[in-house]
Length: 132
Length: 132
DNA sequence: GGTAAAATAAGAATGATTACTAATATGTTT
DNA sequence: AAACATATTAGTAATCATTCTTATTTTACC
Image (cartoon, rainbow over all chains, first blue to last red; front, side):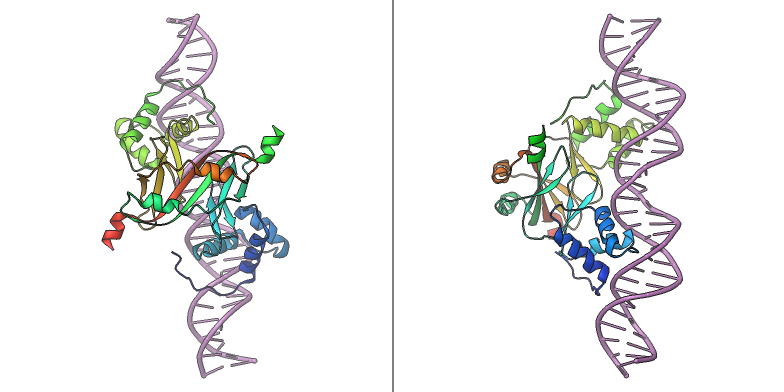
C-alpha cells in the first residue's frame, strides 16, 4: 500500500511525530503547527503539511477525514475506530473490538480486491450528553 | 438528526435531485454543475452548492467524503456502503449486507450515544484489477 | 394582485492546502 | 574532514474547492 519514499532524518519531522504520539485527540495541521512552534519557532506551516503527508503516505501516521472541514492526524496506526461528536465535533478513539471481518462481507459480491476500510461513528459524546 | 429547514420549491433544486437519482457514480459538485447547465445554462455553481447542502442537511441525499479532495453526492439514502479504488479513484456502491450492528459493538465501552456510521472500503476495483 | 420569505445568478471572498525557491541540513564518498 | 548529491527547510506566493454577498427573481399564501 505504501511505497517507501527516501526520507532523510529531520528534527522537525521527528518533533511532529513525537508530538502526535503524545496526543489522543487527533489534532489538525494548524494545532500541530502551534505546538511545534513552541520548540521550533521558525518552522513553517508548509513543513508541517509536507511532513504529515510524508508520514501518512508511508503508513507511519493516519490521516483522518471526518467531514468537519479539516484533516486530522493520528499517531497511532493500530487498527482502531473513531467517533465524531455531532455537537462538539470532538474526534475520539473508540475502544471496540476489531471489525476487520467486514472486509470479507464487503468483498462477497464484489469483483475487486479490498485491502482496508475506514469507519467513523457519529452521535453525541458522553460529555455533551451529560451537559444537555 | 436532520432539523427540517423550510424549503420552497425550486426548479433548479428539483433538477439537481433528479440528476443525482440517475447517477450511480456519486458525482462531485463540479460534475453536477456541468450537467445541470445543459438544462439551465444560467445556473451558478453557488446554487449547486447551496442546494446540495440543503438536500444533505435534510437527509434527502448523502454527502460522501472519501478523502480524494472532493465531496461526492449520492442520491440514494438507503443504508449501503462504498468502495474507493486506490488506482482509478472511482467511488462505487457495494452490494453487501447491512452492517448496522457495528453501532452496537462501538457503543459497548463508550459513554455517549451512537446514531450512525459511515464506512469506506479501499482497494483495487475489478476494472483496474483486470487491466493490470 | 400584493406581500413576505426563500431562491437565484453573478461575482467576490475565504481559507485550508499546495507549490515554488533559494538557502540549509543530512548522509555518503573519497 | 572536505566535497558532493540529495532531501529538507523557511518564507512566501499560488491554488482552488467551497462559502458568502447582494441585488433581483420565484414561490407560496392571503
